[in-house]
Length: 271
Image (cartoon, rainbow, N blue to C red; front, side):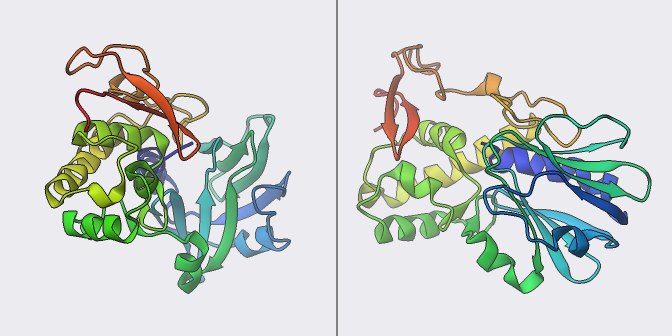
């Protein structure tokens, strides 16, 4: 699933290319996504100018000139790409948004778990149900420590993946963050100390900055807004490396399932 680094990469790439462009046509080939597209989705978007691109958590937010916001969530396998508008439709090209300069934004989604909607600006918070962004200055060690106290019975992995608390982190990067912070994924949140909270926050910033710099992780479906692969998958310390030696201590990495997701950690480096 595309997480914060992948979405941030798309926003940074597409922003300069499409900001200020007018939408001339919206073609909906498949409306049955995670939530069915509104019947007037195409009408809400056609004729609107794209004012700005930004991100919150895993959501791409495109401000429109009428004050509304076009929400894009990539789900598990979505791609949101810009092309010259002349290529033939590919399987799973569900929505094509044509721009005044002849180019087209295409939403392709094999599993159809993504979401597209045009909503009032004031409804964005309700629509995304997203907590503090993982790269926000508001995500401090003290804020994380307080969240750990509120959710003391949950695991650290579940806490970091809870989009209502911290927006943007998913399975890949939570595995990596907890390794860098030296905290085991199954550790109860109630056991997190203030010192460890600081280490987790530092690890979040370190891992996300590294992933963004490398265009995200292309493990399965992910490509950026111009169909380019990311390369951070070659920097992963623990994700999907069960049985391989820890790059820090040499101990074989372990795998388990936490919150229904594959989980990887080092028994020696994480406590």
